[in-house]
Amino acid sequence: WSTSDDLPTVGAYQSSRGGSYDAFVSVFDISKTNKDTLVLGTFIGGTGQDMARTLAVDPSGAVWIGGLSFSSDFPTTVGAYKPFSSDAGDGFLAKLDMAGGKLLYSTYVGGSAFDEVKKLVIEPSGRIAAAGYTLSPNFPTTSNAAQPAYGGNSDAFLMIIDPQQADFTKALIYSTFFGGSDGEVPYDLRRDTAGRYYLCGYTLSTDLRTTSGAIASSTAGQSIDGFVAGIDPRVSGSSALFYGSYVTSPGYQIVQNIDVDRDGYLYVGGLSTGNVYVNGPTNRFGDGNPDGFLFVIQQ
Image 1 (tube, rainbow, N blue to C red):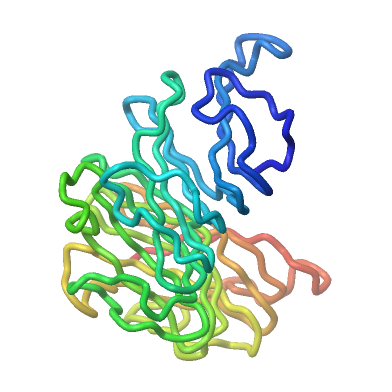
Image 2 (spheres, helix red, strand yellow; image 1 turned 45 degrees about the vertical axis):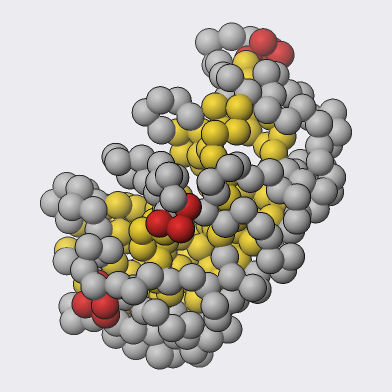
């Protein structure tokens, strides 16, 4: 995001700042030098605060961004899944044709309270999966949700939107909460070749749902724990959560990155002030300050 009125734009959909913080997208050609490196650039935002948190490029070269907006006039497109703001802070998803300077699709996402998109994934079909967190008990969920009810404080969410739907009322393909009675915030999202999703982040909940085979089925401390969750949107109801685990030790830990390979191994990275290796070394590697960690989970 930017508060600069002189942020360089080239071939822009929106050449000037709407107000306060605006999201922006810039495209660079690293084969060029100096100012010629910037080949495309645009603001996107309304008169309030708008911040991009995640970006992905589809096979056509169109750029998807997601984030949060406090603008009641954030630009949305005809046929948007949610064209109007709740005025409490909404997530957003937007698709830009950078070369053509066009906004191809844009929508708010969320309920009546604060919502934020933290990560998006483009499916091969063109549908968009988004993970974020919500303070909205009425965040929209689908009938096949793994967790249809709000857990409390703030919950992570996973949703899939089909921007190609002619009828915007059918654009929400899947949506579920994931959370306990306290707060959750996701940091990363990945999709495997079978269409299952993995999200990770941190939790303050002592009653987060876990599954058989979890590396930690309960919290080991009284602070912030990491979490890993696997959700299959093709499965209806609570059985869609096929993997759920704390990443925990006394102190605090956050899972910031996750990836999955073709064999189903999960690669998990983040930071911890303790020792998150359940079957690993017993000594601490640092002096009580946060250490990075990386481990692999075999499901």
